[in-house]
Length: 503
Image 1 (cartoon, one colour):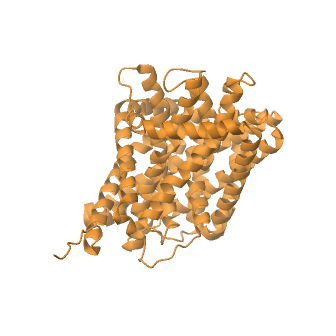
Image 2 (image 1 turned 120 degrees about the vertical axis):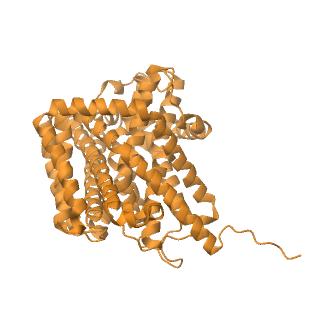
Image 3 (image 1 turned 120 degrees about the horizontal axis):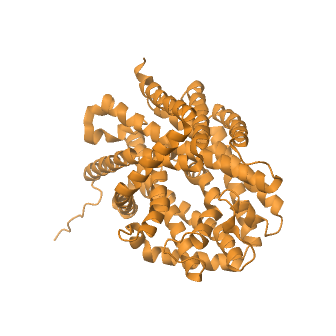
């Protein structure tokens, strides 16, 4: 076995065993993962809240610290991609499918089904629904991506280390990162990446199926989802074959155009003034209550604690599971950016876009129900978006645009995932071979199907939370390693040193 491919073969073996188990004993597999997931959520919920908040605080420190002047590469390095293209690529990789899937379903659920504060159907419930949605998709989520991406980009472009998760831990483990310790870290990273990306692909397939069912009465079942995933797999493999500079770049820009068009249609046809007012009010409430929400665990209220486990802990686990994939991808396209510029654009700009998105789609869905026009909360999560469109002008146009956007995000996420997994399993190569990328592409789609087959969306969520726990420890170590290296370099460069005045 070639040393370069050890991570590839071991990861492939573990994941193949997972696929076979899910096919042979799907019910047992779903029950087993559900039990582990419940234990992790109950026993480590406090841990997820604390570690994610610490990561956010460190990102904010780097944003305002003099250390932010350090560049990811040589100090005279120029960015490889234009800023608009760069933002489009990191956004498409970071949240694409999930944002469309949860755009209406999460706010309406918090408002009408299960409130984070226990109060549903009121004006206060509207405010709480959007505030907690902002919390789940805002700067906490992007800080996880940012710290992982920053560590990888800093060590790779600044110190010429391999483009691997393990390489970022050299200040802590020394030469061990080139041996078994490093391989184990990279294998854990691959497993978390595969399960995180497969979860999003499953969401995409289910929502495309839901849209087709709502519009054309096509059945909702695993066989239709199989066809959807098969078609999209062919498309993203074609994109993967064309390379980073063509396929992903073109698709990322197309995603932003489609998403922008869909947002404008919802903003114009929806309750425009209400959307603007909700956005403004909720941003203010979000900033005011951010510390309280960040550590909210409800130790004496089982109902609210169950809500936190099902939503907040699930999201923190999702972002952590996606972190190696999104982190390596963002790092790869961020050469030449300063740390301050990097944190600003990765942390704040996407969060602002997310807030506007949920204000438009979530706010429109809530107002339809609050005003007694439609019961969006009665629809399944994958159909709620199309239910909202049916109550506004040009429903067929907006619905088909949404399906195309989901498919495009699906292709971009899978394409980015195959590229990143190829890098991770070929010793950090910037140009992994097509055979390796195709292998991962097919396996990603297969795992998404197996998890859907064995337990639907719940099985997807279970596996993601399980995969996130070990990788969260790696993120903590990466953060410590990065800060140690940055402080040493700042001392060498004289950054932050206060010069004494001559008397």
